[in-house]
Image (cartoon, rainbow, N blue to C red):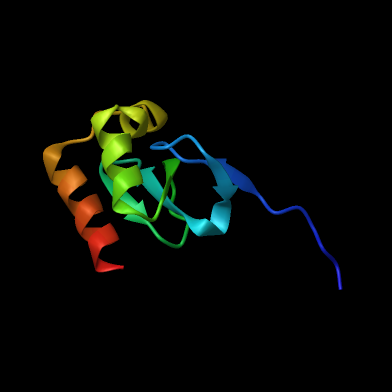
Length: 88
């Protein structure tokens, strides 16, 4: 059995590094819309947050998510992201 390198990503909220699979990718799609990307394969610029409300709130409040996506996060997009995390 082969054991390879596990990709690491940094949370846009708490700034801690964790395995890519343990985090949620948030994507700014080519049309500019911001959405959760649970598959991690959607086209566009991505950022990662832990799948807990505190990290999402910190990423939104301190601007880490907007900075990583290089785009402003609207209230509507933030609400959809919060709803996705709460629904998991």
